[in-house]
Image (cartoon, rainbow, N blue to C red; front, side, top):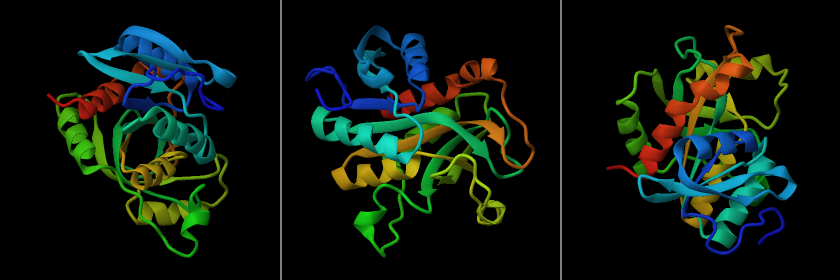
Length: 235
């Protein structure tokens, strides 16, 4: 048990999927895993462990933003021996060819600031995904009838941004989408020698203003979850 996770030793699998929303963790666990057990309810941040094709998997909420994710990822890695951490979540599309419901597999995650920035000081560390997971996710995505994009994303530390000038530079430099957690996850994985990846569903678009209605979001996230699971356990 840690400050934020009430699981007992052995309750957490070495492979952890990290949606931001704890209720999305519940939905994903009940939809894709068997023999599901709730292993955490501290502060309403739900975590579940079950099996997928005979492999133990934990699906645990991480909250919104890099500070929240940093808390859970640190504890999962340091106290529960998590070795593979895959963020599954929503993002905003930035390029005109990225469509609603498409999946983005994040090769890199740029940011202005993360909870780890104080460690690096003047050094600009370049957070990137684990290549083994990335390549397995790309292979898994080819089995599905969904638009898939592989490349860089932007992890923002604010949700209601007013930096239209920054958005323009992101688009200009090929950033596919924006979310709020992956950069810190990639940094922590590098620090602790773990594997990390972010597989994201485009739920809204910064240029077109399109957005998935809330009742359609979960139904549109299935491809993302299956890609993440197949990347963690390639056949």
